[in-house]
Length: 317
Ligand code: 3PG
Image (cartoon, rainbow, N blue to C red):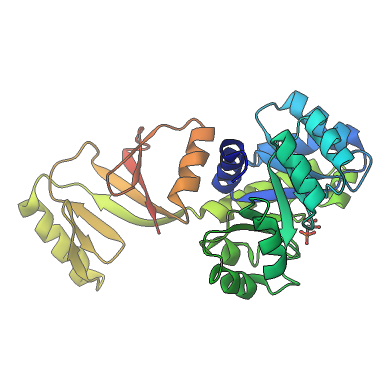
């Protein structure tokens, strides 16, 4: 495998965000506003495509203004474009197809290369160059989720970033596949919106997308009790009144998924249970927002600060 650490680090960052806005920008003057709108929507990643002459300058401007943003260069078709992208500050190179010349050049420069593939033959050719993370392009047109599931059979170790035809309607379906690192696409920041200066709209789409990816859902309440004797009648009440199944974990009694009752006195009088699609992505999100938390042995996240008298617990759905 080539330049393991950079490739791994970049892929981990892409995976921790879960979506990669693919951008075609015609005027570099719009680039900072575009990046600011994605960041306002809590989306710190962008792929600027070399489909316009404004690509390199846009990357450079965003890199300068938002040094921590994850910036990739897309639609990179020649070694010259690789040079332009790297000089401008791109951290990884994306292309619609696999090109051995670009693969070799990226290896030489130690810049991660994520080429588009959509067939076993292309994949195997690219694997010969040490690659194991691919853009799956054009995802919907080439069989979508069904195709990715089929590819996971012979190539279980490979990871994909499906792009092409991804929308809010199919995003979560793709992200639920273990082989999918993240999804890419233009729906978050369509070029028309950029040129019309609709940056608030882009921020809203970005924020809604991040919310879809994380999937916060208030799913239950934790009630405090000093001991099991106090907890049991509360359990009986909720189970019989709201027709919920009784259950038990090491530390709580449960009534359905809605109510948990602590068996021993806890720090907070009550708590909220919020389920999420992906604990690793939520952890990355909380880190970015500088919200403190601790992680329990069973991978639940407990926010350090209570709110309104409630402790807040985040749990894998
Ligand atoms: C790309 O090159 O990655 C695609 O144009 C993005 O596809 P989409 O416009 O269908 O999202």
